[in-house]
Structure formats: structure tokens, C-alpha cells
Amino acid sequence: MRLAIALLTLDLLVSSASWAGGQPPIVQVDEGALQGLEQETAMAYLGIPYARPPIGMDRWREPQAAVAWKGTRPADHFGFSCYQAPFKLPASMGRLPFTHEYIDVGPISEDCLYLNVWTPKHLDAGALPVLVWIHGGGFGGGSGSIPIYNGASLAQRGIVVISINYRVDVFGFLAHPELTAESPRKVSGNYGLLDIVAALRWVRKNIAAFGGDPNRVTVAGQSAGAAAVMALIQMPQAQGLFSRAIAESGPVLPIAARDMRASESLGQELASRLGATHLAAMRALSAAELLAAAHSGPPGPPRFQPSMDGQILRVDLGQPSAEKAVSDVPILTGMNANEAGPRSTLGDFMGPPVPATTVNYVAKIKRDYGAIAPDVLRLYPAQKDSETVEAAQRLARDKGIAAIIHWGNVQMRYSHSPVYTYLFNHTEPGPFSASDGPFHTSEVPYVFGTLDAAPERGFSPVDRRISETMQRYWVNFINSGNPNGAGLNDWPSFTPTDPKFMVLDSSFRAQTLMDDAKMSLFDDFLRQGGALSVL
Image 1 (cartoon, helix red, strand yellow):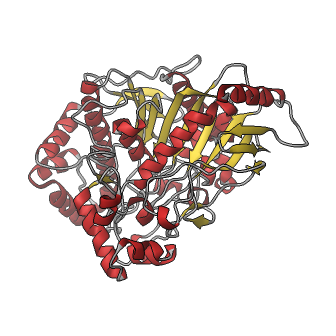
Image 2 (image 1 turned 90 degrees about the vertical axis):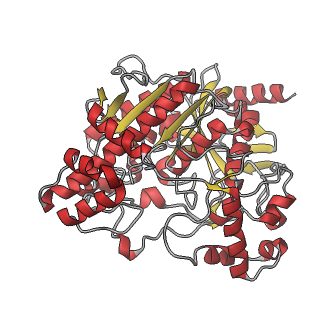
Image 3 (image 1 turned 135 degrees about the horizontal axis):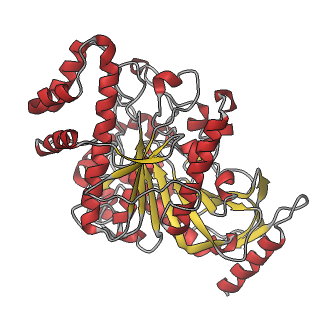
């Protein structure tokens, strides 16, 4: 019966391919009928509930099946974004490169488990490959409705594009002994990750109704979204729900998971601060009260984030795993050339700026690298103050490249699937472009073809050619697990003996980006207990 409904719905979509007015097409999913809208170059179905609202007694519980509705549900606007603190930069940290199109999440609510679907206007007879996008935000913020994630441009290239919301911050990652005790799994704290799995299960059941192929689903994300992709590869709960993976800025950021017991202690500390003596009292509090208390401590990295609980999350986020992946799938991963932050100080976007002097540079290297600091200063010298920022940026970039190479070497020991690596090295235009360089997240609008989300940046024909080429590589990978195709420069797969990166800029050339001396330096850093990341 479900197959018949899906085929009938696909016929309706195909017959409406030339629709230019009147009522948008109606799609039937498990929970009911949806009416979409025409959006730019694609058909859009926005604000689709994939799970029951996680409110009341469902706060801090695994996602439950979405409730069916009667009649036809309008799918013409985004659902609420998940409850989170407004994006606000502490004054001590200077400025970040993110402008409105990167951070506009819209209205927020705990009732937020929605996804959005974009399909081509003209559907072929065959089922289309599917991209499921997981937003970034450090597991403390973000939304599938952020303007740079609009899927219309990618969809017109012959794929189905989906963006999702998942619980963040204290609502998505609170662990507590009482939550652990009430859970059938006897673990707590990874509700945001389980939301993503629930969204993938919804896609598996329903994507054929939109013309998508449930056997060709690519999970993709950037920053925290990339860390979530890496987690999904190792999660038994996600096995069989996707066939390829894209992790943008994944292995290069210090997004670490806590031990579940440490996360439980953090949850108990929050409960004590709130004066809540039992779990029911915490569930009775308003979202605003919880968030205010969760953010009442000192500023810094997210306080509530995924936990290694041994069942849902078994390995650290974005780090090489010493065990075979649960889902052995092709992976496309890489980083941006200036992930660490604006080119004006020795700081980064995770901490306060530090004046760019040789004294500060040498002190930072000695503090961060210990016994191998002389080798670092030899390979990344700064003889005068004007050279310090460039030296620090080269070091951060190379450490990120080394992190990807190290991750790739470990991945190749346990995987039979290819890996493709890249360095995004194009500077997005804007008033601070000379300082920002190819900053963290700046590749995303090129991948999605959403440059017009910020027309004030003044994108050039070169920007648009780069975006068009990147979209072709990404769509090829989503379609087949290989980014290569006719008319594109060759992108070789990763090999430990000769790890080449595709440099994404106006040239699009595969290059060797790390020499033996520098790789040896970073290997020494790992051996003395250091962590490879750009920060």
C-alpha cells in the first residue's frame, strides 16, 4: 500500500513539472498530505514535522514518532528553530566573520523537530539521490532554515535536498543520573544526535514520495554538523540509513565529547543551581529559565554537548577511530584555509584576541608545543611583529591539514570505501575579506549556490564560477560516491602514501599540501599528547 501511494505521489509530481500557477503539488507522507510551494528554481516543502514536539514530559527523551494530521498541511514556511541563545559575541573576542546570512535562525521554540525538502521542478522517471544537511553551531545553536542552507539551487541539479533541525544546548545534550535511570538504554545526554537519526528514519520511509531514492542518501554537515556526520558513521542506530557522507571542517575542530559520567555531573550541577531536587521539577521549568541557568557560568566552549555513552556515541567526535566504522561509506571531507579566525591577531574565534607581536607569538608557541617549540619556530618563523599573524595562520592551516591526513591514514586502515579531501582556498568578498580570508563556514554558500543570500557582498563572476564547479563536484559525489565527472579536473581519492587535496579556488587542482618535515613535526606533537586541530 505504501509503495502504491509513493508511486502515485511521484506521478503527481511528474505531472506537475510544468506547474506555473494555481495550487502547488500535494505530496502524501506517512503522517498526512503536504502542500508545497514554488521557490526559485525548485519545489519546496518546508516545516515538515519528523517527530513529536519534545516538550513537557518528552523534554530530554528520545524523539517520538510524529503525530498524523487530517487534511492537507501547508508546507510553505519553516518550522521553529530549536531553542537556543541568540548569537552574541563577547566584546573581549573582537569580531567574527559571520554576517546575517550565516546566523539568522528565525523564531525559536522547543517544538522544533522539523525538516525541509527541496525537489527539482522537473523530475525524471528515475529516483533521485538525496542530500540530508546537518547544520553547524557548536551543538549550541543553528538551524536548518539559515539562509545559506536553502536547497533550491542544489535541487535543480537533479537531487533532493533536505535540511533538518535537531535539539541543541541544554535541550539536546543534558545528561543526568535520573535521565539515565529512566532511559531504556540506561544512558542520557545525546538527544540531539538521536533527533538526527529520527530524521534519517523519516527520510527512509518518506523520501520516495518526493522523487528521492532511499538507497542513495548522503548525510552531510559542516562544523558541529560534520562532527555529527562522523558520529553517525560509528552509530549502530544509523546503520543502513545513508550510503555516503560529507564532513566539512570536521576533523580539524576541537569539538570533543565528554564521558557520560562527567556530563551527568554537569547536569547535577545545573539542577542544583536551579534548586530542582528531582527531574520533574526541571521539566516543569520554562525553556527560558533553563537556558539562562545553563549559560550562567563563565563564557567559553559549549557546556552541553554530546557524551560518549558507549551505546549511542562510542568514539570521540571527529577523531580517528581505532575500530572499524559501523557504516563503511565513501567520505568527502576537508577544511578552509583560514579556519582559525581573522588575520589581525594571534587569537582565534574560540578565544580572545592576542596582540600580534613576536613576544606573544613565541610565548604562545612555547605554551602550546612544549618540548618541540624550537622546531615549530624553525618551520614557522616570525622575526618581526609584521610576520607573526601570517606565521600563526600558516601553522594553524598546516595543523588542520595534518589532522585530516592523520584522520585519513587511520580511516584507511578500517575502511574499504574511498575518501576525498579538499582545502577551500577562496576568499569570499566583503568589507573584511582581506582580514577574514577563507574563513570557517565560508565554503557553504558556494556549495549550496546561495551567494545571493548576501547580495551586499558583491559576488563576482569568478565567485559564481567557483560555486558552479563546487556544486558539480558535490552533486557527483552525492549521486555516486565519487566527485569526478565530465569537464572537471581530476580529484584523486586519498592515499596514505601520497595524500593529495583538491584545492577549491579558481584553479581547482589536486595538490600535495604537507611536506615530510612538517608532517614529522605534527606527528611528534601527537606523540607528546597534543591534539591536531586548527585552534
